[in-house]
Length: 556
Image 1: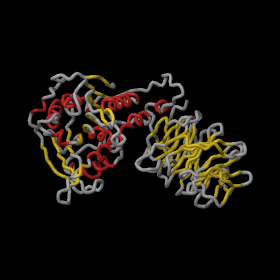
Image 2: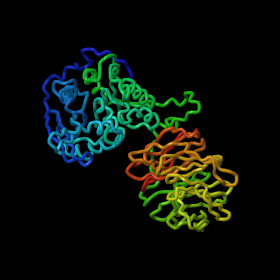
Image 3: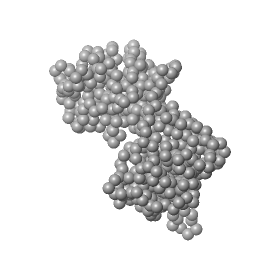
């Protein structure tokens, strides 16, 4: 269960004394330095590897990586991690675990009289994936090259204190496939480099499969960057609200040091490495008013399932009133239908389109930017005809009265096609790479996502097809780069907007507030678009590189 509690430190912690780590470690401790980093050019990273006495190459060992490693490895320090490992491994409350103690990077001087440059804050306080990539791609392959280490994230933990604490959380947050456990002592979840946003991000992100231990005390720092005690309390509350397997040990007094965390280290490790499972169902019955949190849509046990795989490049998801699912394999130059009733697949047309939607006449309309046209496909015969030429459409949306809107990404415009005449006019302009586009359920609002910006614009749709009242009413969360990469869009019966993006599927309520972000099924492949389809239109389908996935949601 979740534990948020105030702790009065006592001399002996249940089970194993906090001073049990005073004994000389029985395993093998080696020291080395990494000097050829690509991600942190010119920096030296000193590190130590502790292999406990119980390690055998025949069985994959668990792994725990410590930032500010020398402080944790110090035999007479606050943590005495190696000897603590020995005590818990002997007791059987912790698996045989290899520890890697990494010091922050230092760039040595090359000029006389110059000082070494510490890059600790850049490495630890930044919210990017650069540091965890350094661990995964550069340091750990060298440090662990002769060891048999488990690849299971549930058997891989990461730890740190102060800036190293937020660093440990960031590493697991970015790569839960690598680290399933986090231990943070006096973590700097403050505005040093923007870390104060984490509680808000946690509350609006699909929960990740990580177990989190936090520790802090009332006497911790309060300075220009923020209040450490308040920041850690905010983190604990956010994690608890989203149902994480978490524990927060908080005490009165102490300061910005490892003293309190060291006293609790044995107990914290015991909790972190315990074997029992965790379940924290979300109470959807609470009076939420107009709020529509993502967790209310997520159904326990429902995950992404493969609909179709082995494609060249999937795009243009579409549906009909019966919930049948349509898509295009752009490399195969074919449009397909997947039955909502039994999942059977059939080919409808030999065309490659990047956007697809039914018009009021029952035909499928598609975008062919490469051929500079918008086409209409007869789903019964597969025959197609151009309804607009000399245009570069990306994605489209169609009103019940016969107006077709498409995004012209390069021009930064939304254009309108009158289907009856084929006339093309500019409906809106000045957008940063408009890409995805969809209409509200009543047809009165057109929403358009920006690929090169970070906004979703909404426009009022007038009876004559003109757009006005254009405003950037939804702000997309960005990934590692400056662009949100807003792509395909969909809307559900409750007028939630779903936008594929660099960080996953972002869900907005009808007022434009971010409800949450769903993880991309396969982050290694491009996430291009989405649609609500299937039985009762309660499945979110996404086109994700060479695979189409779907996931059942609660659509209220």
